[in-house]
Image (cartoon, rainbow, N blue to C red; front, side, top):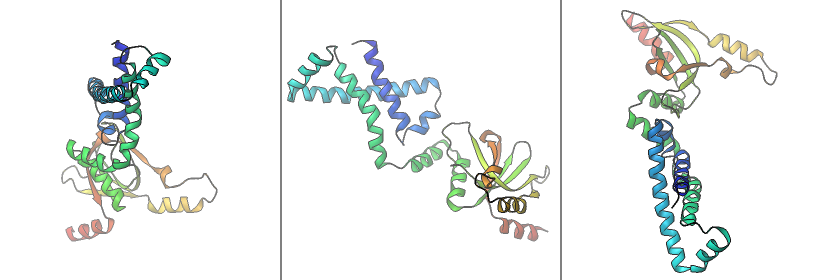
Length: 230
């Protein structure tokens, strides 16, 4: 069995892992040798399934194997390798009909302890603001635009800021210094032509690694708590 035929199932394994809902995000976050190892293992599983299938076909319908060798390939295990890569390319789309990617992403985030990702996803589901405090002391409050589960470990998130401010260096109390909501409403409301500005055009892109803390934010609750503290 040639090296090329060994690499073909690994190619099918890589395609399967990058397309199947339960494995695609974890593989994208893996580093180089982990990707190769997982692809090789998946390819081996596909090869064994394909080998069992071709053996069963050869026993039940020997003429199929004869025609394959006669008219297509006479290389040993070529049928097994071809079937394994076909399974790798086709199986994820079938299995995805019975799986939910968002649920798989949640489980991956929980397993890896990525609580900020879970919080952003919750904010999107509940249509709430989030408050993000950055390593430079800046704080943004607004609506996240993207799903909280990036495909890479060090990804970016996007937020349309409604307010911005900072954390007091001594008390760490949130101090809101700017409100963008009146200006955004005025700008967006005055544009009627297609292709002009909308809310997403004012998004701020923030690297996930720059986030120190994140929480759900309700403006009314913030005002009430602020008044109570005063």
